[in-house]
Length: 283
Image (tube, rainbow, N blue to C red):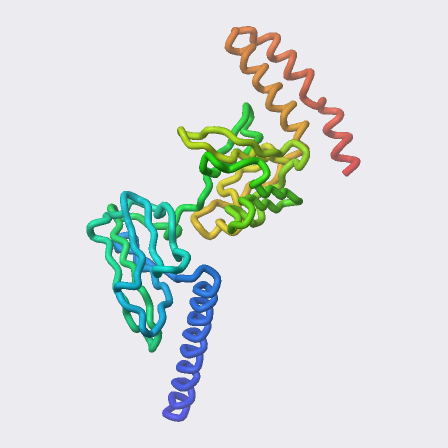
C-alpha cells in the first residue's frame, strides 16, 4: 500500500501540472488575440477583473484611463486603447479603479470594474453592433452598427458568403468577421444607411433561409455566452411563408366567426389522409 501511494501522488501532481500548463496556455492565447484576459467570480462577486500586459517599467502616469457612464477607455498613452466602448453591464465608475501589478513575474495593468448589481457578465465589452428579428414572420435578422455622420457608402466593407459575414469600414478593424448563427438567403440580404435610436447607423438585413430557425445569437462564436441551441432548420423558405400566411388567414376567419369556412379551408390546404399514407409507403 505505501508503494501504491508513492506512485499515485506523483502521477496526480503531473496531471495537475499538465492542467495548469494547459490553462496558462489558453490564457496566453487569449491575451495574444485580444490584448487582455478577464475573469469574474460567482454571480454574487460584484467585480470584473481585466488583466492587460504591461512593460516592466510601466508607471501609473503611462496609463490612459477614462470611464464615464458606461463608456470605458483604457490602455497606455501613445498607443491604441486595449479596451474602448461600452461595458457589458451596469458598473459603478466611482468604485472602479486600476493598479499596476506583477503576477508570476509578469507586469500587468489590472482593471477592477465594480458591477452595479449582482449579475454574470458575458464579456467585458458590448459588441459594436446589435441585432434583432424583423419582418412580418420574423423572417429577417436586422444588424445595426452605429457610425459617425461622415461615413460614406464607399467606406463600407460588406461581404456576405455562405454562412459568413464581414462588415466594417476601410482601414479599420471589422465590426463583424465571423460565422453566422444560421443560413441566410444571399440574394435577399443587403445593407443600407439608416437612423436607429437617433443615431446614424449601417443596417444589414439578413434574410433567413429557414424562417422557423430561431437565432438566439448573431454569431456561432457567441454560443458560449448564454446562447441556446439553434432549432433544427425547417422547410424551404417559400413553404414556410405560405404556411404562416395560411394560418394567419385561418385565424382571421375564426375571429370573424366564420368557423365553417375556416374548417373547409384547412381541409383544402392540409394533406389528405390517402396522400399521407402514400407518402409514408414511398419512404
